Image (cartoon, rainbow, N blue to C red; front, top):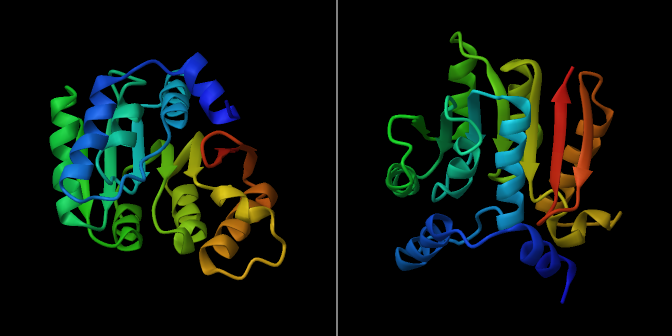
Length: 208
């Protein structure tokens, strides 16, 4: 038994709603790259602990992470940014089937464009979840800070990247982008942060 299996066996219960999402994504040919079950549980707990109500995720995919976030607070509303319209449609279907109809606003298109548009409005957010193209993680972080309430949490997935971020001489663009992101979060004067080796790594930052 490896560490991941040990954690899942002890702390993650069978979840038919989330398992159904993965099955449906396979059927329609979507990549099954949602957050790990244990990471999803942590997302739910972080929303509960923080009391976050206004949530924003970068990358909807099939709605798995969105459901995990919304489970944390019955008053929470989620803004979900997704590049692919067909993915957003699948996510919306799964969100509604899970009982969260009317609690998600989808913005379809390049996330940087959607984030720029949001900065011209009045909305601010209590918690952000980044799980999209790795090369733009640092750009997404900049926007999240601009859109954050004081004390907001910014959570990014895949920040260990199967351990590749440990390689100082990494050459692929995604690994270098994640190394840059982690360093930026660690050093940023407006953030206090930590990387948790759960799933494929979650970097969690709190806006001061």
